[in-house]
Amino acid sequence: MVHPNGSPNGTNGVTKDRSKLIPFSSRLKEGRALAQDVWSIFNAANLPADCINLGQGYMNFAPPEWIKDAANDALNTVAASHYSHPKGRPRLRQALKKYYDPKFGRDLDIEQEILVTSGANEGQYSVFVAFLEEGDEVIMFEPFFDQYLPSVTFNGGKPVYVPLHPDVSHGKITSNDWVIDFDELRRAISPRTKMIIVNTPHNPVGKVFTRAELEGIAALAEEFNLLVMSDEVYESLTFDDKEHVRIANLPGMWDRTVTVGSAGKMFNATGYRVGWLIGPASIIQPTLAATTRIVFCSNSPLQEAAAAGLEQVVDRKFFEQQRKEYNERRQILIDCFDDIGLKYTRPEGSYFILLDISEVTWPENYPFPESVKGRGRDFLACWYIALEFGVSSIPVSEFYCEEHVNIGERFARFAFCKDVATLKQAAERLRELKRIVNKTSA
Ligand code: GLN
Image (cartoon, rainbow, N blue to C red; front, side):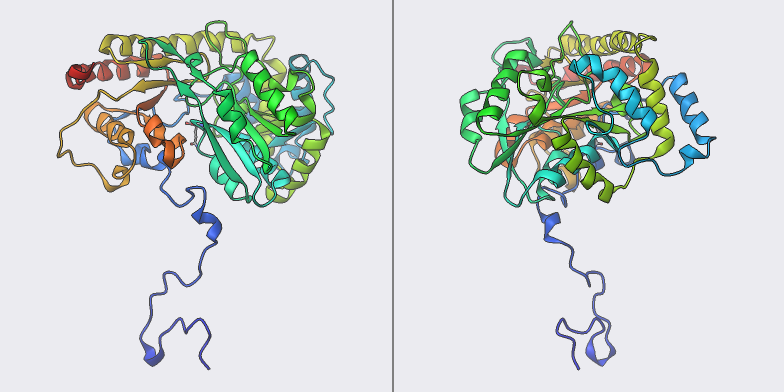
């Protein structure tokens, strides 16, 4: 008898192509999950060995000693070698409470209102699992952190994009010049809108949303009964005395907001994969049900390390020191871009800086690899800069939907979460861009 799908081994003994026997889920066809992601294309492995990596946002330095010590201590205990409670280890939830109670002005309930997750990504994914129905719309501001997109579509959600508009008309723009058009935001809301994602401080713009902007978003969330996911993983990294405002703290917003945090960003430990969610029980409890069935629990030893971090961070004035260091790092790239005479967005938060690369040109027959062809112009520019000038960056059109690639392709994102010596060397190399900047259009 012939199997309805045909026999994997052809009749008469000729072997058929067995490389695609089992069709994969159509889910992967959505949310750009099958496209090569920007992190893989601009990965150190694909670039010359001596290329300085200002692309993917991770540090080239370690977490502080006192956090590494706590990780090592935890590895030597029996308890931390085993499962944790799906809510997170009690010590970490206590430490989160101690740190965040004053920030939220609340007496947080560690059983109901705090959830430890396997990095911020998994936490956000679990919120989508817990709250999205097929066809529910999720509003995200462009540029958006690329991971949001598949996390939404994998769970049946439909992304709806609202671009932040950069005012590039004047020379020196800051992240505050990337603004929301509130009429456009209102028009993006439909009867199917379920959620809105806010990211402040913002990756990749560095924007720290103002109180007025967050009030505007909050008013719409209240009017249309939206769940707000506030990705605040860069909360401890603000500059120029810019105030980090939590949308959850605006009147009435606690009940509809889940705030996302990350030990990776706070403590230079992006590989620890420890994140957390804070919000009302009505959001955290369904999300706990989802996360329990996705990962069951997060890794135990590094939760202990994150706990030690949060327990000591205030007394050690760690963030004050960290902000000073990042300010110095930011300045190295700012000075460099000023010297070259290229426009950039001065970031007021996070550790990224957007360079306007619209005047960067390259030889017509430059041998670009297939992976960057057919993408935005920025993919070519970033590749060319990485290969010819030895500094990698991330093309910003990756953070836009296809219809809006033209907005993003004007920019390359440089990460400054690197030590001063590395940034100085990168700046020295980037100064050479002067040679190829198309001054005629400047
Ligand atoms: N958040 C980091 C960045 O934006 C890393 C992202 C990732 O590797 N998925 O660079």
